[in-house]
Length: 119
Image (cartoon, helix red, strand yellow):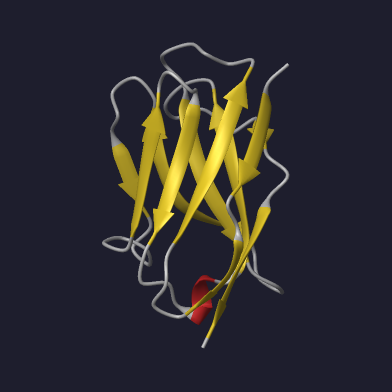
């Protein structure tokens, strides 16, 4: 059973920074993907960033490119999302998810962590 536990959300002023963590257990094969998604009130869930675990290849949504950085720690089996220059429109619940390989459907999701950016 795969489990994902997110942490690091909170309230921050515009221009500030937060780092989200996603601790994964139950899936340690080298081919898998980890992605971050977010859902704002009244909006659909949207892709934020992902990383191919073994290769370290990263991909970002245009809205966060240059401000957010996804990374992973192999030893801790944990993925991170460093968020800088935060804007009020970044306010959302952030979820991490994992897929068994590149291009596959994300099949396990964390519980989500709230990020609120005040203006």
